[in-house]
Amino acid sequence: MARRTDIDILIDVLRGLPRHQASRGRVGLESGWSADKVERVVRRAVAVTSGAVFIGRGGIVKYRGSERGADVGLYADVERIISAYWGTRSAGLRNVSVLRTARSGRRSAGVWTHPDLVIAADPRRRDSLREPRRLHAVEVETASGFDLRSIYQAHAQGRGADYAWVFGSLDPGVPDDHWDRMLWTAQELGVGLVLFQKPGAFTTWDTILTAERKAVTAKERESSIEVAIGESLRLEHDL
Image (cartoon, rainbow, N blue to C red; front, top):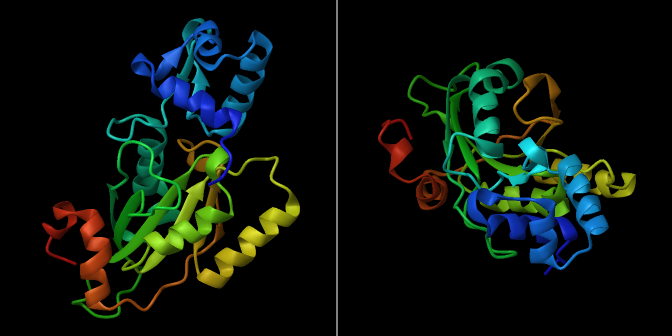
């Protein structure tokens, strides 16, 4: 298991408090850090978590990355941009639907159950009039969680989908050689990469690699990706 960083600890502290927010003094009390360390970690978290950790009114430190079921936060921002802009403008998709399938709470390290988002959409041209909408499995990452494992995770959780993607913000401190390994791995596995500076601002989004279409059997789709999606998409009668 990877060593937990100070940012991970900060997020755990905020997640355990009402409304996922606290003063810097409360953060120091809960974490056992000095005031100087609290300030350093908070500033770093604000810089690299793509808005998941931010400073609210009165200097209150807030975390919204866990609000997966609400219409705020990282998942909602990414979902909205995909639906309104990225799907049609960057990916050339039609009839775009986005479903949030991420479980609430933290997943155990190395245990991958299903993607964070699933996109169902028609391509510019379908292979036949009866072809169902194609499925895109998306792993959404904050900068502090985006690393080489994200690529493998997207590939594993995309089983049964036509395409697998990682959407997220890359930590500016990632070494060039590590980024090169991430790009190579994504290309080898056919995983698409989309980076953004601000998840809620489409002008900051950049498609680095386009996902490759996979050969998916009906059995694979039925036994994997549809289980993750649940009934929501199947009610549309086009899978």
